[in-house]
Image (cartoon, rainbow, N blue to C red; front, top):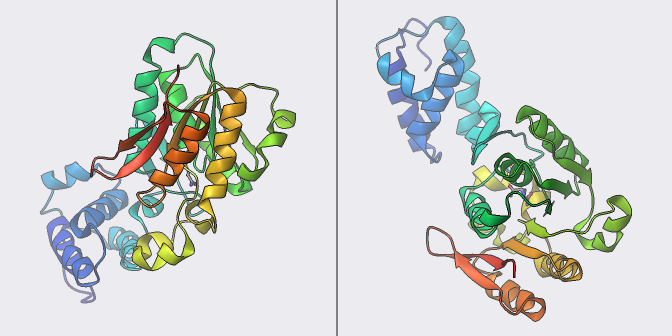
Length: 288
Ligand code: GLN
């Protein structure tokens, strides 16, 4: 991308950058440059296919260049474009919050399915460790009758979640809180909770080396890692038991069996569900 008198077209940019990203082991090389060019041109990604021969102006190239550099440094696409999609919600993301994952959509789908006949009831739902707020926002969109809330340890995440509720025009109550201090929650919000959902930080630091730089160097450590994830799960499980709430937990294949056993200690009918790749990922105690 150096020759200054070269005429760049949409297609030649897509081809050059795909190759450049591939050489650097950037995940999703073609998709990455498509998002970047679409962002710079202010069009939809698929619209690029209708204008392959369109020349790129120097103003457009000046927008594209820094974005290509950021992506080559493994910055996730969603941080570069500033948004992620989670179910029907558009979620604004920055490095203060975890990028919503497709597996988490599966957990939310399970919950919605189990509560399909309770849409009209006045239920209280709490998301523990809410990050961007994607979970309660997406649920509130589908069940406007429910009171949905979420809290996070990070003040910046809480602010981002509040911004996302406004962006999606839903009323969700976000506040700061600590997973290990759930007994103080009643002082903050005078509620009893019918449904508790959480995707807590469940990765231990020694698993970090197995992970891609795209995640470890850019997403917030606070959202990903914890020295003792089981202490977080135990706290959430006891709290859910004190509320007699239905419980929806995300975990990974390393923690799943342990989380299931602990959940069964309080909720004997709990079940383990697998993600689309067949990995055990969700421990659920459905409504009785
Ligand atoms: N609840 C948010 C999500 O699932 C954030 C989770 C987290 O920060 N660990 O994306």
